[in-house]
Image (tube, rainbow, N blue to C red):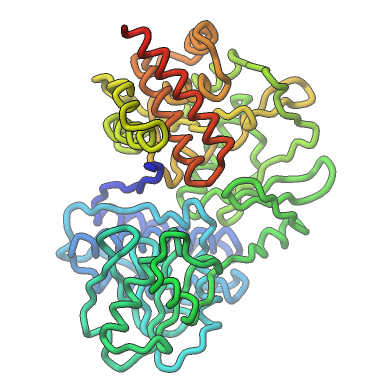
Length: 510
């Protein structure tokens, strides 16, 4: 199934260096506390992203790597002191020989999965090391995480590596200079995912160069095992090797809001805090710039009458008012006018960059792949050809599901889970608002007349030529996602929709 996708952007290193320097100047001027620490971590993440881009391009990375290691040292001091002290923040200046442009990856753990650098510092200190540490960070996110681990262990700047090859059987190339001094190797990354092969590829290279497993340690982001695609070799190594997960305990939330109740709804880390009418929903929105962007989006949606009231951002967690009296939509309820107004408002408020989502050809490839695996190869001939249009993108919602709408006690509708999916770790990303129209058509099972009503309320930015193609692509994407999650009921629902839609389309063409 095709579901997931990576996000990246092209940047000019000198501009990013200047922005990082400006951010650190602001940190120096701030009073001690959580806000200053959060800004420092944002600068650390942006510096790690820049180093990742420079290293991937083969540019000169040493000076930037030393700077990142020093910055990580300041972040560790801030964390250890309860946000009271930083020590001496390093300065960064222009670096000669940098490429004119680099490609920066989105560090998924910092953006989506509540991976915190500070948790890795704590985990690193619990390792039992038999020799001086040598840290190896797996790019992309391992660039920043490796620096924080090196700072926590008092190690030199880490080596970073970009695995390549089959996603379930990664390989790496390392310089044999990393072996000098017979160190204890600490391999740092998020995951493990479906196969754990990125961790495994580094460990395998070390073992092939006579490093015993007793001098190899893993620092992952969770304490679980690799997924079902892991090889027997990688699974056995993972079971035997020393490993400590960098799992965060968000004590700053408890200090601010009191006791926290973990909510197990979907993938996003969420807590319920407080009592009575003052209860708040605390959900992970992203570290650094991503979290700040989502706070602004939440404020805009609330002002427009569609979103929960945002209270603030607390080191990656967005606090929103909790509505006790809210209830789900009634079975069969189709608030077409409100949904259309929401799509139109969102399109107006949140324009997006051209390269911020999948192309129409990529969506067509996804639809055909997912349909062929579930409905048969012959059915892919019915997938509409994407129209030749100039795609005007916005930060689409991408989740118009019935259970994402709540009816408040005063009768108003509230759209929940509205900030994340245009920028999540999947293929779709930002699209024309026609994607949300298509999503609502599928999720609410609208007939032609109802779909026409929705279109009439969804605003001028909706490209009507995309509706038919997007309807198939949306259902194909959600079906693939359900299959990967082993959600048979949801997968069958989208499969039935596709069968009906494609059959009707085929009859109309005859």
